Length: 217
Image 1 (cartoon, rainbow, N blue to C red):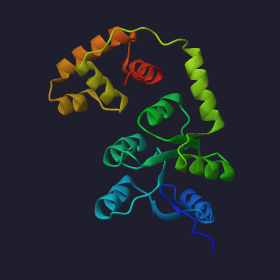
Image 2: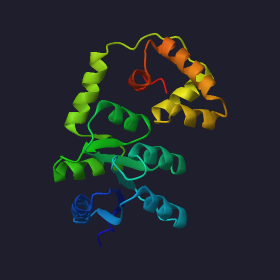
Image 3: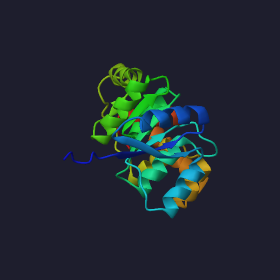
Image 4: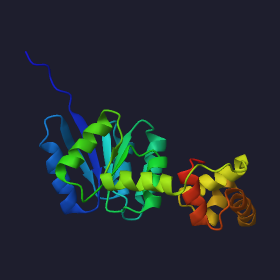
């Protein structure tokens, strides 16, 4: 008698209906995979998590979503279910989004231009604990690290500065950081000036990029 094969549940959060249906059919054609749910908006996805005990083995997550950025979804879902494996499947290939996704807990990052076999292989790799990266993304990451050379010795940030920087990496604006930390925007500005000085940068974008490249947060 042949033992039953374990079937992994893959949920999809993708607002492009035609693309989502294509990926769902691709997954359901595999003997060891199934896609019981597809969500077009983050609200639908989080409602499902709140009102059922059902959980996916892997979440396929787009970044360009309505009313809530995919990186925000990633950060929120990793707070709710830290062990959940999230595989980004996105049209975005800019370095900052890739670094932020990986640093915020994504198990892999595939481009929508990937062929079906690459997507299926990526899903299987993530299920088995490996990282899944499109070749273009892997090259970008390696080039990014090699371009910037060895990690600099930087003056340590204070605990509060680290908190401010973490919110900055997540895409929060100054007012939102102030509200989260219960401090004034003026105090946020003071912390940012100190962060810029210690990281040897001149802008929020440079600070975020350097923090992600060097694993500061």
